[in-house]
Length: 116
Image (cartoon, rainbow, N blue to C red; front, side, top):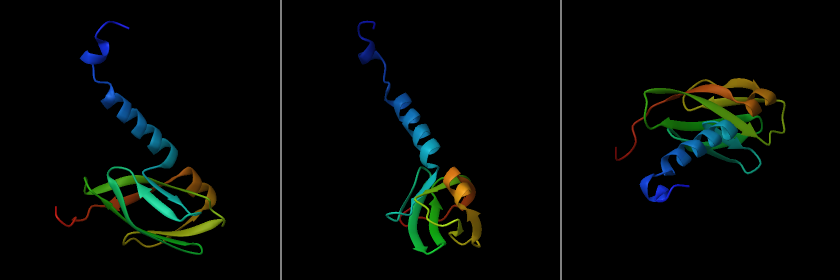
């Protein structure tokens, strides 16, 4: 390595982008673990609420950046063959375990945040 390399170049941006890409590939933009149950979203998706009742999963999700965002939702630790999934105000949709494990495309609408 050239002398002074660490002082002259900031590798943190590239490392951060690589980490985000890895997280999105593995977990999707929105991830639900039904064993706990817990849900989290990656930027710009923010999960505000998760409710699980048998095969019904309801999420309230916001997009902090865009007007409408196509996001990939992935789930793990599913114990049923199908789930009815409702995202925010949308109608519930029926998805198979395989599709939810692999990831489905959902639309997230932007909402006003308190304090913004």
